[in-house]
Image (cartoon, rainbow, N blue to C red; front, side, top):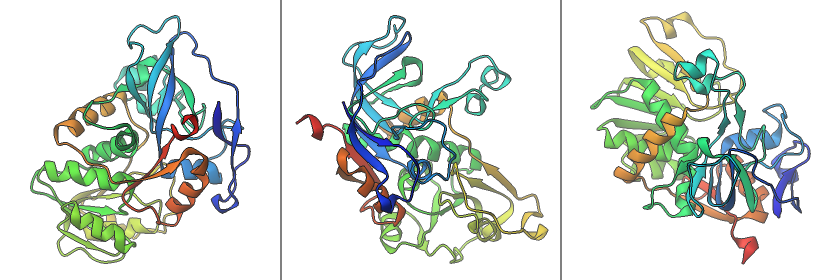
Length: 337
């Protein structure tokens, strides 16, 4: 099969992904083999490709927002039918036995493995995944539009939950890309007012089109004090900015897996019971709850499509805020046409 393979991390401008022929994967035991149709391009992929996340598998096929069709079952796979359309998220597998898994916090499992990082992902024609960790895709979402839901959507949804925001509340978004453009649609469905702080004028316009009450630069002060805020951008310097915008008792959620260093914080920014929380991965329950809600709303993803061989170009566009719309998606079917 054809796949985008990362032999060693490097700046995306150097085009480190090689579009090459690799052996077809074979499903083991409880795994399913998927014919990949689409794979979202996530900022976490950028962190993997550029080495901001230390390599765990080398070489590796990135990609963890995967939509595909089940074409082969492992000998112990019983849940899914041949031909089922499913999505593969970041969380690839957990141990199922540790204190975190047993208490509904499998996202914190010490033995967890991750798609496109610890195991091969979806920048490819085919991939394998444990059937217990994939999601049926609601029929209302076409493949390309469904891909961003599988990480950006799920992580944004978990971030909203951890923020504690309530209907009628004021919520700040810092950064407005892949995850934020989905999360705002959930927030508006919950009757939450969203204030978007993002450096890119096109993303400010998109935020307003999707129902934001206000949009401005990342350093701009929202016109109201915020009940909660979520930082989607991997920029530690935004932590004190967002804290200053919070009401007393407000919560600041850090949605990224990687963030640049946070500057020293004055205690006054945390005083009055303000809270900082990080988001670590997701649980399967997050994914199931989100995809059900996404179909009910329904969520509309704004995407820019790239052919699979042009994954480097998609990552460059993501790095430089040049993706037209909310998310870049690789069309993995083009190599089979």
